[in-house]
Length: 286
Image 1 (cartoon, rainbow, N blue to C red):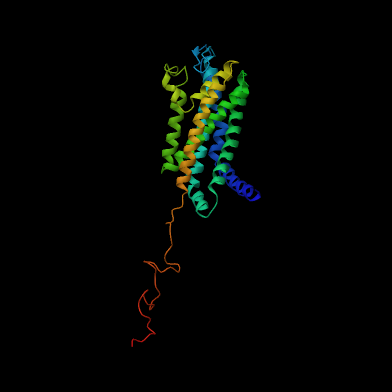
Image 2 (cartoon, one colour):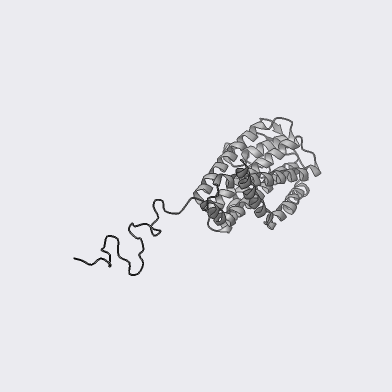
């Protein structure tokens, strides 16, 4: 048990160090989240925007700028989590593969990355909720934080998948950006007339949006939305684990290795040495 804990702690330290060195992501957390939320509050009109929340069936009528703040917070945390995990996976993939091929347990590596992602997403979600509460108090701040956390975790796992399958950094950044923008924008009643469409139920952050709006503007339970988001989180995390496992697989050929004392085909011989099965030069024919 002590050995397992030591392996996990070492891998976690490397994962957290990698995130801490991503200064651009830290800048996004500190500056982008409050800027986005503040601009939404100042620039969007505060007239009422009634809509039906599919998760509860309620008709909610929040102020337009409050509604945009919630979708803006969701967009911000998903972008940041996706960027951070994509960058960590893209730049550290070769290092992870070397560790795995050297015998480092992949389970410990995956658990360390998951733990680091959990800490980052929890901090970002709590920060976004606190910034939102500066302008107006959400009805259920803890549930709002949980919705932001689950959305960030889902996109963090998607960042692992994209970081493992894409070959250029700009491709991954563009993919995360476009997925997050389209995902949240299509669910904002102010920007999309189809936010009540059945199609939006298949978007990655659908459950988090439903839970976040319910937590922000009503006292109704938001557990249904969170349950849906947890399904997306489980699916994306499973995909991330499978891709990580494939990327760090042992690329060495299986079976006996020739050239290290073996006598199979392809075994190199010293200059002047006899081939296997040939008579020794010291034995004179009779």
